[in-house]
Amino acid sequence: MFGRSQIARFLIMPKPNPDAELALHKLGQRIREGFAKKHPTPDKSLETVRDAVREQYAQEQEAERGKQPAPVAEKERDPQPPEPDNR
Amino acid sequence: MDDLIKLVKTYRLTVGVADRLRLAEEIFRLIEPDLRFFVFRAIQPPAAEDVLQEVLKAVATGMKKFAGGSKEQFWGWCYRIARNKLNDHFQRQATTREQPMPQDELWQLVESSPQVSPLSPADRHDLEYAMKLLTTSKPECYDYLWKHFVFGLGYGEIAEERNLSYDNVRMKIGRCLDEAKSLVS
Image (cartoon, each protein chain N blue to C red):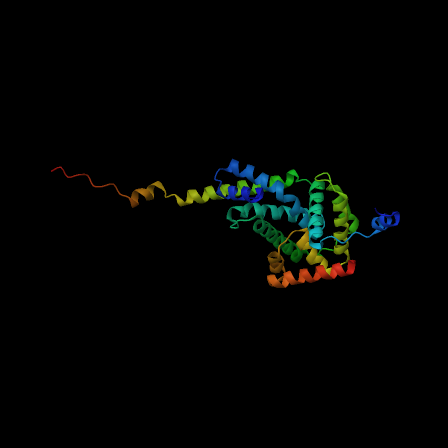
């Protein structure tokens, strides 16, 4: 059985320092969570992202169209075979 | 695999614009707050808002070409873009760089996070200790510890930013941590 003085000593005994790296990681996570909670993603940011995605998509489509050969050029590169000679 | 990198990988392979928009929104809802925190820690509003929008645009445009395969690599890439945009801003404006965040502001952020996941007495004890480590360290160490533990940047990213080797950064952070521990105890 613990005596009263032993219990009191246990209660006032300073807690050992936690693992420093772990504690700092935990703090970092809490700070980021707290910031994210205070500043949820605003519409302005999502609109910037949407515009960028649409713009990039349009550029890709444009580039695709640029790669496809024009119909006239196609004809020139791939001429029709000559008419069979039926003589 | 982590949700974020799954979304990024799917985005890279997605052709249709409607699907890309949906995925981009999901990705940016996850990453925007951390990027906002990174930028707003470095510069003051209203300039910070403009720089943040530039960062978001650059990340959204570059995501198709992002070649990494892990969440850490993706964050490293995002922070590299953010850092470059901040450097452009510093060159244009000759503004002063970030100052340590006041401790009461840090606690306000910590206090507002418990609704996401509750803060136990043991957690509070750990966080108080971590806060002491951070706030008692010297300015250079504060910067290293802040970047590594609060922003979550890897040694590689910090090394790139500081033009140092990976091992050099690893050792510096280790020394800063030891120094902070000795100051606190």
